[in-house]
Image: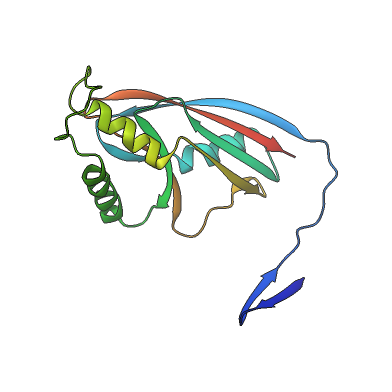
Length: 160
């Protein structure tokens, strides 16, 4: 364990034991039905898959195969956070703007903007077979369109 002190801020570095086991990888696709604009939690499905493939330590990449939906790591305790996030995204990319790309309706281009703002992939450390998320963190698919969709989310595990 090493301690660092810079500008009166103390940081603690806890090293994890090195492992030299051979790396393995696994892939899966989550098909996520949505009912319009909302956040859908994927945390439990991803942790279930990690347990199913019997992993230890590594990293899981979560990738959304869409441009009008996205992924976010967010609070999973208070649903008001989700409401406020979606409302804030609506203010950043309102449907009332005049966009050149609107062939699929007024929510089309705003959905692409929201997807760009929030991103389509995350890498999450996996320790002892579970994602190493914070106490109130969860992995969510953010649906930015009004109509229901079935979204594909690719999972890739790399580790031991």
